[in-house]
Length: 339
Image (cartoon, rainbow, N blue to C red; front, side):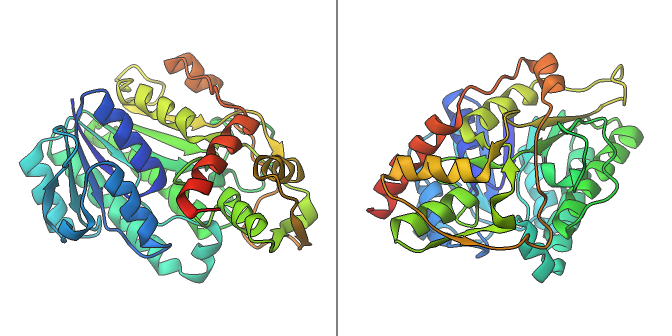
């Protein structure tokens, strides 16, 4: 199978690319390598898949030095002409769209970036899939679409009409856009609502990375809502396993919504923030200094995934508990940053 992954310099995209390469699929990675966070981490991920930073140029297709079935191209999803050319030339079987402007809090400060990448960019992906006979589009949604819902655990059947950040709104918009294309053009699409993904090579703006850095450096850990938060932390290997299984689970005409499906993908075991911090302390062998703060704008108190639909569809069951996952992260963290 020939698969395009957008966002392969990003956290989830990098790990998924490794899995698809290992499984023998012809894989093309795409990323614009923006500077939302330290690009050195993005180049380090690309280097792990045999892509040399010094050879990267906009619009240039690079062959991996390590894997014969992997290539990479630097492009913006907003560049419609370049994207159309790529799809026409490559004729992908499936597309996994993980490229997006991430971050709830950042969306409050920089709203236009989210419209450009998450709305315009996704529209271009839909159009390219429609016009180039792509058999399945899998795309990243987010648990943030549930907002401050009191219905616990979060189910795909819940109404998600009240997002509390522009990031969440952009992800809900993606789901609506995908449904429209599935309905109008019989384009098979699957949205995945990710729940707090963590693990090695994770994003520096995510809690585990921020907490590990602060604890390692003896600086205060910022604890929002005075610690009264819980998250459905999901280890990266479990996320990748779910995506991998979904790629070949193509929605058809007999789906409740023809050619369209939507799944939560999480661990289904929320962890209290203070317990999470204690787990990191144990893994690092160092106590945290805590700075208790009020709730941040755009944040939600609890996330909790009901993953029963995904389990029924593809047999998805997360395997990595929080202690094991944090230990694997901190082992990587110490090697990567010499702590």
